[in-house]
Amino acid sequence: KGEGILETNMLRRILTGKEGNESQSEGQGEGRPVSSLDSMDEPEVVNENSVDHEATLEKLRARVESELVKDYPEDRGWLDDACLNRYLRARKFDWTKAFAMLEATLRWRREFGVVKIITDVSDGLRKEGEAPKTYVNGKDMEGRPIMYMKPRFQNTEESEFQMHHLVYNLERAISEMEPPVEKMVIVMDFKQLSRRNNPSLSTQKQTLNILQNHYPERLGMAILVDAPPLFHALYKVIRPFVDPVTRSKIAWMKSSPSTSSTNIQHQNILTEIASSDQVESEYGGSSNFFYDGEAYFAAPLVLRYLTNAESKN
Image 1 (spheres, helix red, strand yellow):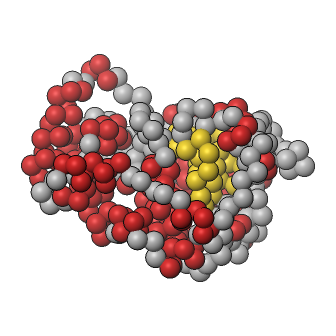
Image 2: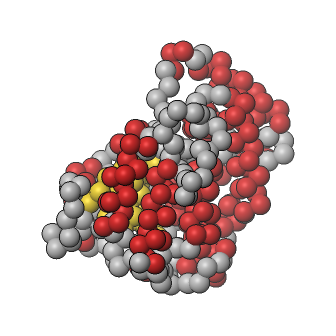
Image 3: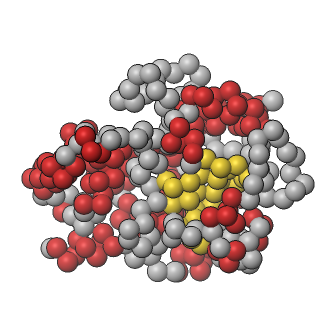
């Protein structure tokens, strides 16, 4: 029963941005479904023809240049037009709200130490990466990196390094995006989910905060593998309240025919969106990828925005 409550609360937070009877999130607007994934994937459809996009982008760019670049010179390369456009889309092309979101992210990146985390891998981060609980491997046919999350392999106690590990992998996925690709596919594998390996409420909230507020417009698809039965039951209830665009980004699949079925249709979506050699064998592909933590961290992680910053200085 306890595990069911944890699972139910996690799905509620992921799909609706609410827990229990929490009120609608500020800024989401009244009278429309909300979702914690709204900022990370595409927001509610906006008629861009009704907005002078170039003029809006220029206003945001001008304010960023005058107020943010001088305070955050190390992030100058990160503040390119592609980044500004992601934040504009996340805030429905309200450039003042996009600016506020950008400023908050820059402050978070400095305080959290994002660049240091990815360029100077700590012992704590290496410990997190010893187990194949979160990693990037392969791309779909659109060139979107695939990030796997497998809570059953949790190998550490709750600490700041768990969030460092999440951010390291988000940045690794971004480093593997070839322009104009800007999004990733996240595979959440729930096999053997239990109270022991289910992320705590605090960890879940921190994770959602990072994804929503600091990596907007980065989610291309979320694939839920072997989700517990309660997830399906709850999803049927809250589905009408989930933003339609978010809903279209969510896919359910089972890793093998032996997994108990539900009334929700399952399909091997991974082998539909990615070639077989890019999909791990346990998900129906032909890749025999074996995760090796030492090799994973040894692989080059080159971020274009760091290179861009150096060229502009």
